[in-house]
Structures are given as structure tokens and as C-alpha cells.
Image (tube, rainbow, N blue to C red; front, side, top):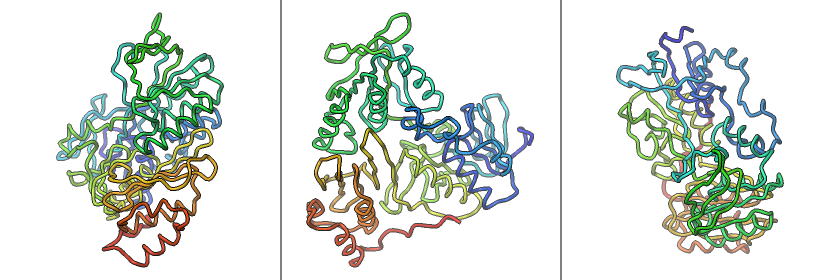
Length: 431
């Protein structure tokens, strides 16, 4: 294909959502032109192993990529790597690359993802201070691990916990700094967070909470330590800043699309401009299940967004009605979360704070179970809690779910039998 020619389907963003969109488009349209543009120099890859198996060395590089080059050739999906889209014109149906090329399109998807949030303190640009978002980030960090004597992880969220666990397992003395009162503070309460902090300490990670980073100090351009708000300095030759991400919504803003903490899309993943879609980490999508817009930065949502959005680009009319899901591993803790953890009026705990059988953190919004987080929870109980979210049942006494003498299976069955209003839309098969 001549890169200056127009394309029927354009996908901006070479990640999981973008790839799945291209696959779905080709499934429903066997002949029209598909162009996927990514600003990284790589074919689409899976970001999940970057803070897990690939960082630890358990996964080889080839297994990070979602598909090999031959797949794109066979499917007649044109891929432009190392190219950045600088402008989108929804009315004129064109987009412009950083080399000045302007390409007409029929329909377009923005799957531009997100970028790592940086810490705006002195010394942030020192060599040895990393963020972890891309494959190149991960490979630089892997190289640094081989010679590191001491590490500091700034941020006690999911990425921070994963990275700290890998460093400690590799024998690198590691300190994790969290500005809030406990790790995973967005997802668990103070009691559960305190248990997680103690668990990490028992595994060799020094966890410092209620602590902020004020500067990175170094010599000859390389980091040597982290200065804390308390005035204390922690020595370190390797620092990872894991304090969240920022959605890459600038293209959408420039194109006049609705943006509110992400690109606003409806349940069909279409933006405020007809024929322009958004998917994955950058999309703030309407959830019929919860009756509000959500933005979720994890594998499962990105993959399904891509499949549904891609199908809709070909003329299908599929809604994204799935229950959002993500997972995280740290040491022997297997953490899974379902639903919406962002809005809660009550938080309850089910199970004892132990590594073995595990426990659940349950989130209620006006008596309705809207989300939960499982730490080493059993799959049968996970499935029963998922059913309770989907049933939209409201509990006058939310503490009922904390009583392990009452089986979740019985509660879920009762909720299913009772029915609650219109209930949730049925999960769709994408075909």
C-alpha cells in the first residue's frame, strides 16, 4: 500500500486495543484496507508482562509480542511503526503523521493508551530514575537490575508492588515509598493495606508509608539517592517511579472530541464524532451495567474494547457490557479485581487477612455491590460475587456478606431468583 493513499479503517495506537480492533475489522470485512499506526518502533506487544514475567526474566522477548510479522501479512493489515499521528480531522476524514503525510480515512479508532506519570521534583531526569510503561522502559530496567546494589520504588500501587516484589526476589535490597497510609490505597482499606505492607516487609521490602519524595540526588548524572520529605535520604542506584498514568487524549482534544479524564465514548465505543471510535486505556466509556462512564487501564478491558470497537467500525452495533476485570501478582499474592472500585460509600471485608485462603475487599454504593478485590480468593467465590454485581441487588445490611457462615452461593442464588429491576444487559458473544 502506498502510505499516502487513503484507508478504509485507520487505527491510531499499536497496543492491545489497536491490534484487537484490526483483527475484528478483518473478521467482519475481508477486503478493505486497514492501517495500524504506532509511535513505538515495535509491533504490538503485551504490556502486562513488563512488570511481571518479562521484568523478572521468566518470559523470553518473543513471547511478549502479541503476533508475529507474518500474521499481519496474512491478514493484510498494514502496520506503520515508529510513526506518530500529530493531527486528526474528523470532518475532513484525514489524519497527519509527524513526517507531514496526510492520510484520508473512512473510519478511525483512537487507541492511544496512556503514559507513565512522572514525578516533578529535582533530579527526576537523572540516569537510573525509571518509569515502567513501554518495552524499551522494561529492557532498560532489566539491564539496570543486573548491577544494582540498592533500589527504591516510589509508589505503592499495583505497578509499585509488582516491581518491588521482583526486585526483592532478585536479591536487590528494596524500599517502597508510599505517600498514603498504606499500599494499594485505592483498592483496599487501611487494615488490609497494613496487612499487605507487613507481608511485603516479611518478604524483605522496606515499606515506608505517609512519606513523600522531595528530590532525587546524584553524581555525574546518575542517581545516588532519594531525598524524602522528612529530610532523610535513602541511598539507591536504581529508582522506579510508579505513580499512575496519564491518558493520551491530546489528539482527541485537538480534534474537538469530548474529553473528560479520557476520550468520552458511548457504550458502542464511538466518540462524539460519527465514525471515530476510542478504545483501551484512553477511553472513558459508558457502562450500561453501572449507568456511568468509567476508564479502566487493564488488559481485559483493552482487548474487549478493541474487539467490540473494531466490529462496530465495520457497521456492527455491539455494546460493551462486560464486567471490568484486572489482576496483579506480587510474591505469592494473586490479586484480582472486578467491577468499579472508584465509587464506594461502604467497604466491607470477607475472610481473614491471611495469605492461604485469602480474603475479599467488597465495595458498595448505596447498598449495591459494585466491585470487589480478591487476594488469593477462591474462584467459586469470585464467580458468585461477580453474579451479585451483575444482579444489581441492593443490601440493606452490607455486613451480611462478611459472615462466612452464610455462603456466597446462597446469597447469589437468592439475588438471581429475586431479580432486581431491569438487571444488567446480557454479555454479548462477539461474532
